Length: 325
Image (spheres, one colour):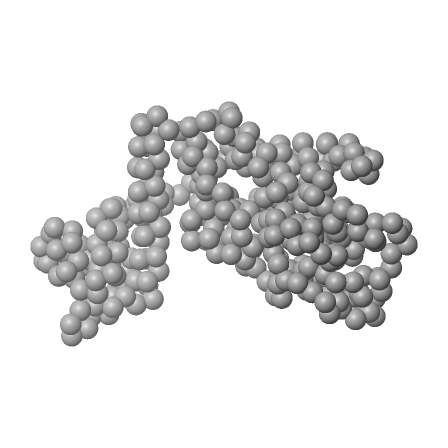
């Protein structure tokens, strides 16, 4: 299949064009940009004129004491920075290979998968490729999408919700995330199998912060059942902190089921026989469409898929073990 030659190749766009473009954009002055690039002002002016001829439009408005990028210039500067950053990262990656390290990958994940299967995937990669440097951070989907768009992480495990702009991202679904109610071991409600929504409404709860998706759906669950939302609440997001609060109180908490099963298997909490209807959306692997994944990032993505498949295979035996306790 024959494809058209890209315009920047036909126009013989050079790296020096991109360097000058970003320097002028940052300095707002052709003379200072030329000094940064160790070239004369006249050479810089000719190179900028050459670039504007290639684009077919002025890129900067000439001011009495400098220049200011117009819309065309701002667009070119933004893409020039991306191209130069990519070339810089390529050099860094090659240096990693030359120094005996096989690369680096930065991953972001929401809290549920961070406790359930993401550690299994990371451990698998670390065992098979011990020279890969892995950085892992846990945040909300909103924060992670911002970090992904900024290029600070390569791979994200999270959600794309209706409010998110999806055109810039690839999404590969991994799993659903049902939720459940949890309590401390020995809680009086564990003796009951007939818990109703009004029982939950009158109970004290540990819940996520206002504004989170789970908090909204938690409160919506009671409104749809014509029940008042619980009024005795503690707001906390960290599963570890919530688990400690449960140990010290008679409160209930809402957990992702995978997280609840993990802590229950460790003997730290118990899962209440009270199905909740405030389940979360499915989550998946999210990457940028305009960013080629590094070999290390591709390896992590494959490990995440394998870890989810493993989790689904061991889920039933784990549930039976928890029930038998």
